[in-house]
Image 1 (cartoon, rainbow, N blue to C red):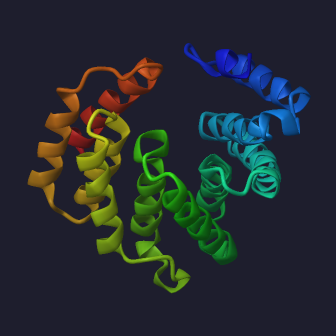
Image 2 (cartoon, one colour; image 1 turned 180 degrees about the vertical axis):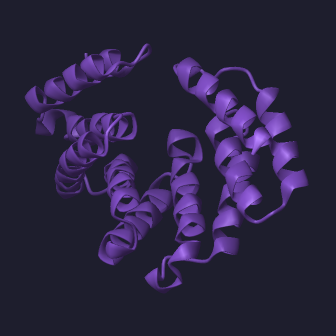
Image 3 (cartoon, helix red, strand yellow; image 1 turned 90 degrees about the vertical axis):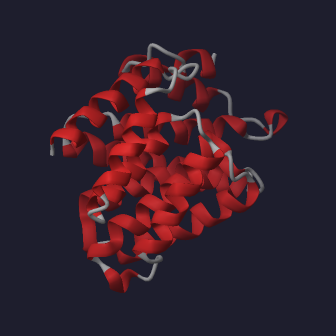
Length: 216
């Protein structure tokens, strides 16, 4: 029921229902899997909310769920990964005032990457690389370099070739590095990809973002 409610077409109402079902399903019998799935629901709600206030509300809820997941299932990569995704939303809202948050996110992503590097279509490397690239503006945060982040993003494209978000994030980083020809090549590759299962709406968003990047 948790996964069915989280499947496409995703809407805030459906994902909130998935979250509510997670709360009712916390049990050692399922190895507390519902806890990290609660953090997953909060991460989606935070990333897809239309106002900063809603984004912060769901990010904070997700951080609570993620910390609980780490406590109960500390060998599950999902626990660290979805905690980090919620921390990422909060970091983007607060920026350089959140040095501790950035370092916590960095550590959680490293743990997720160690446990299951291909989780969520190379999600740990995608999030880690994106963090390092975005922190170019805040070099004192100590969470990696722009070049290291770019290398991680390039790895996601070569390792998880069928997932369009990897291409979008890499293209954005290449444009920031003023490597426009390489960015356009990556965007062309994205446009050739089929829509991945359970991500058809996301795929359309990635294609729309690719169009925007070509026009910038």
